[in-house]
Length: 171
Image 1 (spheres, rainbow, N blue to C red):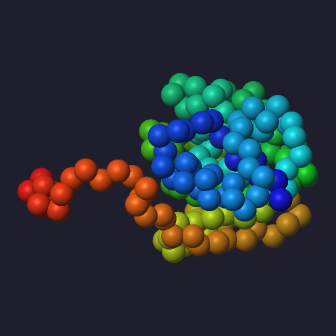
Image 2: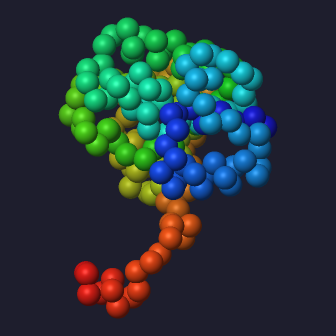
Image 3: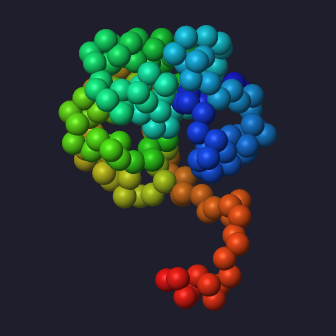
């Protein structure tokens, strides 16, 4: 199985580092926003995480203003990939942290989910929120969307240099 993790490199994000490490033991994994945006390569699954970090262009728009051309370009890529692979989205949050009320970002999130064959949630509350928030979502694929629950990881891979006593005192 060939999996494309389609977002910009986020080397300080332990979730992606640990997930990519584990997945790469089970499949051929490529982490590339360039392959996604350039519509290059042959993959069975395209795995998306945060829509605001799919490409550097989109990340720039996240910090500034989304324009209609970028939204159309994203829709073109999503249509391309969904015709060739299953798009799976891990839902980390319901909207971008720095633009929770921006109507363009609401459109982008809806667009991404409309092409998803599956959504991975990290908690039951996410599934409930998703089904309520996107109850009128029109799918752009012929596949029914599936929902999976994979509880958020523990961060045992992070270095721990604080003793219990230090933690209690700081708390």
